[in-house]
Amino acid sequence: MKLERTFSGIVMQQGYWNANDRLLLAVSGGVDSIVLLHLVEHMKRPLFFGVVHVNHQLREASQQEADFLEEYCRQREIPFYTTEWQEGKTLLTGIEEKAREFRYHFFAEIAIKYGYTKLVTAHHSDDQAETILMKIVKGSALHNLSGIQAVREWKQSELVRPLLAFSKQELVEYAKNKQLQYFEDETNQELIFQRNRIRQKIIPELKKENTQFLDHIQQFSRQINYASEVIRQTIAPYFFNIMQQSDAKWRIDVLQFQTQSRSCQYFLLVELWQRVLISDGIEVNEKQTEAVLTILNSSKPQQDFTFKKGWKLMKRYQWAYLQTEAMDGITETDNSKLFLLAENQGQFLTEREWMGLFTVEQLTLPLAVKEWTKKELTISDPSLPLLVRKNQLADKIIFNQAQQKKKVSRIFIDQKIPREERAKTWVVEDQKKNILWVVPYKESYLSIPKETDKIQYRLIYLKDE
Image 1 (cartoon, rainbow, N blue to C red):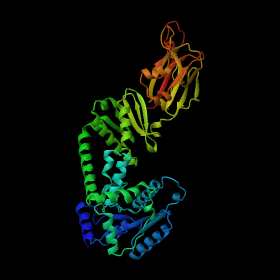
Image 2 (image 1 turned 135 degrees about the horizontal axis):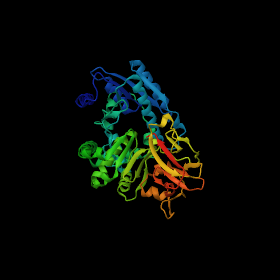
Image 3 (image 1 turned 180 degrees about the horizontal axis):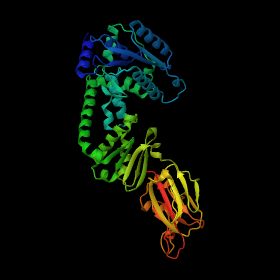
Image 4 (image 1 turned 60 degrees about the vertical axis):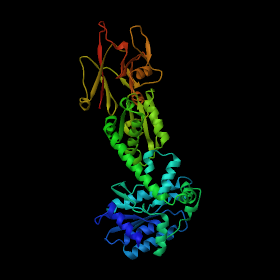
């Protein structure tokens, strides 16, 4: 049959898989996936493949479909893997997205456990059209408009969609001619879902306007892919000069970023989204990208923008950081922490910070901290013991001979100290409530030793950096 020959030719021409691959076919029981199963099963070249199925338990026929597939595979000695989704029974919103997340998590689990090299799904050209139209309506950025990719990296293997060249109508006609048994999902007719409205109302009208509509959608998808490839090659020389990765965190050189044209800035961010957010399953729309562009070009030194899944872009003066909120130990400070330092005594402030107060003649450091980065302040005749605590909003420090005071918060602004570092800053205060040191950024005028002072102390701060 023509469809079978075309399918085999596409697989061979595009190199979707070879005889050494192990295919895991995602089969729901609908006409698309049943046709996919039949086509793979009857290819001339022998292939090792298995079938994976999720029973979402959202319809009365769900169990019947699962039982049918299990029996079908048992009779043909095809490995069959199935599971049930329990959460869907209790959800009121977001069912489609949650169901998809569950499906692909299960698919990955099976693929990794049993060594499958390709996950094969039954997406076709009507699915492609629906996806692209949905993204246009939603306001997705250019790079998202390429729609469904025929092949892409997925977990430790590849995700392959070999039916994208075929329409839904072609698959239905094939199933009827071959008298294949499949199940209709009645929820596909419900117009409460946007995809169904596009499928049932909009795409049929567009097909009437132009019978080549699906072919043109495929061409549009390819053109977007080509354009994206050219753009990536063009910005590649700039990207890693401006965007720097450290583990899962990215740092943006704001000053260099601002020297680029607006169009170059835009696609630098698009590339960053592709590498970080989109690969984590987070879609970034045009409005979000424009908001970040505004932040990075703004004269305001510190601004934040939050994405889904805890990802955040944080501009801090000449640098901006794209990271999850849990990264790099950036957390709210515990302002209740207080430490007292007496003469010739030291304290661990945190696991990576230590402070000690010593007379000039005496200095005993713990062995564990001797290689840490050291900051030191010499002070004279302080009112002991010293209090070491986190900075507070009302804190002020004497900064000149006239005994004038400046807010610690102003010092942070003047020195362009990022907000997260401010929250982690310690201040050293004597018993007269005088702040002697904002560690390690500013020393009080009171801490300057005088020739008449009888006793001088070394206040030492060590940090494991």
